[in-house]
Image 1 (cartoon, helix red, strand yellow):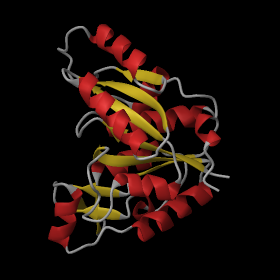
Image 2 (cartoon, rainbow, N blue to C red; image 1 turned 180 degrees about the vertical axis):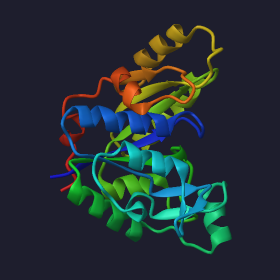
Image 3 (tube, rainbow, N blue to C red; image 1 turned 90 degrees about the vertical axis):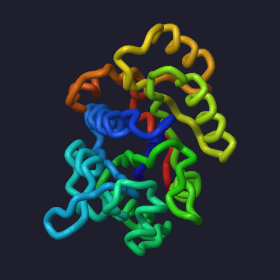
Image 4 (spheres, rainbow, N blue to C red; image 1 turned 180 degrees about the horizontal axis):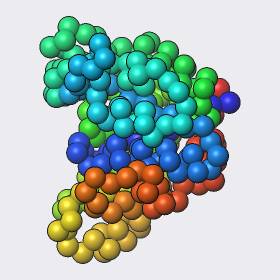
Length: 232
Protein backbone atom coordinates (compact mmCIF):
# COMPACT_ATOMS: atom_id res chain seq x y z
CA UNK A 1 0.00 0.00 0.00
CA UNK A 2 1.41 3.35 -1.04
CA UNK A 3 0.56 6.73 0.42
CA UNK A 4 1.13 10.34 -0.45
CA UNK A 5 1.04 13.89 0.83
CA UNK A 6 0.41 17.08 -1.12
CA UNK A 7 2.64 20.06 -0.35
CA UNK A 8 1.11 23.47 -0.95
CA UNK A 9 2.15 26.94 0.16
CA UNK A 10 0.89 30.29 1.30
CA UNK A 11 2.22 31.79 -1.94
CA UNK A 12 4.72 31.21 -4.70
CA UNK A 13 8.43 31.50 -3.89
CA UNK A 14 8.09 30.58 -0.21
CA UNK A 15 10.16 27.39 -0.15
CA UNK A 16 7.79 24.60 -1.18
CA UNK A 17 10.51 22.76 -3.08
CA UNK A 18 13.02 22.91 -0.23
CA UNK A 19 10.32 21.77 2.19
CA UNK A 20 9.27 18.95 -0.14
CA UNK A 21 12.84 17.78 -0.67
CA UNK A 22 13.58 17.99 3.06
CA UNK A 23 10.41 16.01 3.72
CA UNK A 24 11.56 13.35 1.26
CA UNK A 25 14.86 13.01 3.14
CA UNK A 26 13.03 12.86 6.47
CA UNK A 27 10.80 10.06 5.17
CA UNK A 28 13.83 8.24 3.81
CA UNK A 29 15.27 8.51 7.31
CA UNK A 30 12.25 6.49 8.50
CA UNK A 31 13.31 3.71 6.17
CA UNK A 32 10.70 4.48 3.51
CA UNK A 33 11.08 4.42 -0.23
CA UNK A 34 10.11 8.00 -1.04
CA UNK A 35 9.49 9.63 -4.40
CA UNK A 36 8.88 13.26 -5.24
CA UNK A 37 6.43 14.49 -7.86
CA UNK A 38 5.70 17.84 -9.47
CA UNK A 39 2.61 17.24 -11.61
CA UNK A 40 2.64 20.65 -13.30
CA UNK A 41 5.71 22.87 -13.60
CA UNK A 42 6.13 26.06 -15.60
CA UNK A 43 9.50 27.57 -16.38
CA UNK A 44 11.40 24.68 -17.94
CA UNK A 45 14.65 24.21 -19.84
CA UNK A 46 15.21 21.91 -22.81
CA UNK A 47 17.48 19.14 -21.53
CA UNK A 48 18.20 15.70 -22.96
CA UNK A 49 15.43 16.00 -25.51
CA UNK A 50 12.61 17.14 -23.21
CA UNK A 51 11.46 20.10 -21.16
CA UNK A 52 12.64 19.83 -17.54
CA UNK A 53 12.00 21.97 -14.49
CA UNK A 54 14.61 22.63 -11.80
CA UNK A 55 12.16 22.09 -8.94
CA UNK A 56 11.13 18.73 -10.39
CA UNK A 57 14.77 17.77 -10.85
CA UNK A 58 15.44 18.68 -7.21
CA UNK A 59 12.58 16.38 -6.17
CA UNK A 60 14.04 13.63 -8.35
CA UNK A 61 17.45 14.03 -6.69
CA UNK A 62 15.87 13.92 -3.22
CA UNK A 63 14.03 10.67 -3.98
CA UNK A 64 15.47 7.23 -3.32
CA UNK A 65 13.54 5.39 -6.02
CA UNK A 66 14.39 5.37 -9.70
CA UNK A 67 11.68 6.98 -11.79
CA UNK A 68 11.28 8.45 -15.24
CA UNK A 69 11.30 12.23 -15.33
CA UNK A 70 8.01 12.17 -17.24
CA UNK A 71 6.34 10.49 -14.25
CA UNK A 72 7.78 12.99 -11.79
CA UNK A 73 6.70 15.93 -13.96
CA UNK A 74 4.05 14.90 -16.53
CA UNK A 75 3.28 18.50 -17.52
CA UNK A 76 6.53 20.42 -18.09
CA UNK A 77 5.75 23.86 -19.51
CA UNK A 78 8.36 26.12 -21.03
CA UNK A 79 7.36 29.62 -19.99
CA UNK A 80 7.69 30.79 -16.35
CA UNK A 81 4.06 31.85 -16.08
CA UNK A 82 0.96 30.74 -14.24
CA UNK A 83 0.40 27.14 -15.43
CA UNK A 84 -2.84 28.01 -17.19
CA UNK A 85 -1.06 30.66 -19.28
CA UNK A 86 2.06 28.56 -19.89
CA UNK A 87 -0.07 25.62 -21.03
CA UNK A 88 -2.09 27.86 -23.32
CA UNK A 89 1.14 29.16 -24.90
CA UNK A 90 2.30 25.56 -25.45
CA UNK A 91 -1.04 24.44 -26.87
CA UNK A 92 -1.42 21.89 -24.07
CA UNK A 93 -4.44 20.96 -21.98
CA UNK A 94 -3.53 20.10 -18.39
CA UNK A 95 -5.85 17.24 -17.45
CA UNK A 96 -6.15 14.78 -14.60
CA UNK A 97 -5.67 11.49 -16.44
CA UNK A 98 -1.93 11.83 -17.26
CA UNK A 99 -1.20 13.01 -13.71
CA UNK A 100 -3.07 10.10 -12.16
CA UNK A 101 -1.27 7.65 -14.44
CA UNK A 102 2.12 9.12 -13.60
CA UNK A 103 1.35 9.02 -9.90
CA UNK A 104 0.31 5.37 -10.19
CA UNK A 105 3.71 4.56 -11.71
CA UNK A 106 5.49 6.29 -8.83
CA UNK A 107 3.25 4.73 -6.18
CA UNK A 108 4.02 1.27 -7.55
CA UNK A 109 7.70 1.80 -6.72
CA UNK A 110 7.52 3.85 -3.53
CA UNK A 111 6.11 3.58 -0.03
CA UNK A 112 5.18 7.25 -0.13
CA UNK A 113 4.99 10.04 -2.72
CA UNK A 114 5.51 13.71 -1.89
CA UNK A 115 3.57 15.75 -4.43
CA UNK A 116 4.49 19.43 -4.74
CA UNK A 117 1.81 21.81 -5.94
CA UNK A 118 2.07 25.14 -7.74
CA UNK A 119 2.03 28.57 -6.12
CA UNK A 120 -0.56 28.90 -3.35
CA UNK A 121 -3.48 26.57 -2.76
CA UNK A 122 -5.94 28.50 -4.95
CA UNK A 123 -3.60 28.75 -7.96
CA UNK A 124 -5.37 26.89 -10.79
CA UNK A 125 -3.70 24.10 -12.75
CA UNK A 126 -5.83 24.90 -15.79
CA UNK A 127 -9.04 26.68 -16.70
CA UNK A 128 -10.97 23.59 -15.60
CA UNK A 129 -8.72 22.04 -12.96
CA UNK A 130 -7.97 23.30 -9.49
CA UNK A 131 -5.40 21.81 -7.15
CA UNK A 132 -8.25 20.67 -4.89
CA UNK A 133 -9.54 18.55 -7.79
CA UNK A 134 -6.19 16.78 -8.05
CA UNK A 135 -5.84 16.25 -4.30
CA UNK A 136 -9.41 14.94 -4.13
CA UNK A 137 -8.75 12.51 -6.99
CA UNK A 138 -5.57 11.23 -5.33
CA UNK A 139 -7.21 11.18 -1.87
CA UNK A 140 -4.19 12.61 -0.11
CA UNK A 141 -3.75 14.94 2.87
CA UNK A 142 -2.17 18.37 2.58
CA UNK A 143 0.89 19.91 4.25
CA UNK A 144 1.02 23.72 4.15
CA UNK A 145 4.35 25.54 3.82
CA UNK A 146 4.08 28.93 5.50
CA UNK A 147 6.46 31.56 4.19
CA UNK A 148 7.62 33.44 7.28
CA UNK A 149 7.44 37.11 6.42
CA UNK A 150 5.24 40.07 7.23
CA UNK A 151 1.66 39.07 6.46
CA UNK A 152 2.19 35.36 7.01
CA UNK A 153 -0.53 35.08 9.65
CA UNK A 154 -3.27 36.15 7.26
CA UNK A 155 -1.88 34.12 4.36
CA UNK A 156 -1.56 31.00 6.50
CA UNK A 157 -5.00 31.25 8.09
CA UNK A 158 -6.71 31.99 4.77
CA UNK A 159 -4.88 29.09 3.12
CA UNK A 160 -5.83 26.69 5.91
CA UNK A 161 -9.44 27.86 5.73
CA UNK A 162 -9.52 27.30 1.97
CA UNK A 163 -7.98 23.83 2.24
CA UNK A 164 -10.53 22.75 4.84
CA UNK A 165 -13.40 24.42 2.98
CA UNK A 166 -12.47 22.36 -0.09
CA UNK A 167 -12.93 19.23 2.02
CA UNK A 168 -9.25 18.36 2.34
CA UNK A 169 -7.33 17.09 5.38
CA UNK A 170 -4.69 19.55 6.59
CA UNK A 171 -2.14 17.16 8.09
CA UNK A 172 0.50 19.65 9.21
CA UNK A 173 2.41 22.79 8.36
CA UNK A 174 6.06 23.75 7.91
CA UNK A 175 7.49 27.21 8.53
CA UNK A 176 9.93 28.52 5.94
CA UNK A 177 12.18 31.51 6.72
CA UNK A 178 12.00 33.45 3.45
CA UNK A 179 12.73 36.87 4.97
CA UNK A 180 15.84 36.85 7.18
CA UNK A 181 15.05 40.41 8.32
CA UNK A 182 11.58 39.56 9.60
CA UNK A 183 10.97 40.89 13.11
CA UNK A 184 9.33 39.00 16.00
CA UNK A 185 9.62 35.66 14.23
CA UNK A 186 9.10 33.60 17.38
CA UNK A 187 6.01 35.58 18.31
CA UNK A 188 4.59 34.93 14.87
CA UNK A 189 5.39 31.23 15.14
CA UNK A 190 3.58 31.02 18.47
CA UNK A 191 0.52 32.70 16.98
CA UNK A 192 0.60 30.34 14.00
CA UNK A 193 0.85 27.33 16.32
CA UNK A 194 -2.08 28.60 18.34
CA UNK A 195 -4.31 29.30 15.36
CA UNK A 196 -3.56 26.81 12.60
CA UNK A 197 -5.72 23.68 12.88
CA UNK A 198 -2.81 21.27 12.36
CA UNK A 199 0.54 20.54 14.05
CA UNK A 200 3.79 22.22 13.07
CA UNK A 201 6.21 19.74 11.49
CA UNK A 202 9.15 22.09 11.89
CA UNK A 203 10.68 25.36 10.76
CA UNK A 204 13.29 25.60 8.02
CA UNK A 205 15.92 28.30 8.61
CA UNK A 206 17.01 30.77 5.95
CA UNK A 207 20.18 29.20 4.53
CA UNK A 208 21.54 30.15 1.08
CA UNK A 209 21.79 27.07 -1.15
CA UNK A 210 20.32 24.95 1.63
CA UNK A 211 20.96 21.20 1.52
CA UNK A 212 17.64 19.34 1.86
CA UNK A 213 19.32 16.33 3.44
CA UNK A 214 20.60 18.60 6.22
CA UNK A 215 17.30 20.47 6.49
CA UNK A 216 15.50 17.18 7.11
CA UNK A 217 16.77 17.27 10.70
CA UNK A 218 14.62 20.39 11.25
CA UNK A 219 11.43 18.45 10.55
CA UNK A 220 9.46 16.34 13.02
CA UNK A 221 7.45 14.15 10.70
CA UNK A 222 5.10 11.74 12.47
CA UNK A 223 6.61 8.25 12.46
CA UNK A 224 5.20 6.56 9.35
CA UNK A 225 2.85 9.55 9.44
CA UNK A 226 1.74 9.77 5.82
CA UNK A 227 0.88 6.07 5.85
CA UNK A 228 -2.20 6.95 7.89
CA UNK A 229 -3.80 8.12 4.65
CA UNK A 230 -3.79 5.13 2.24
CA UNK A 231 -4.78 5.75 -1.36
CA UNK A 232 -6.41 2.36 -1.82
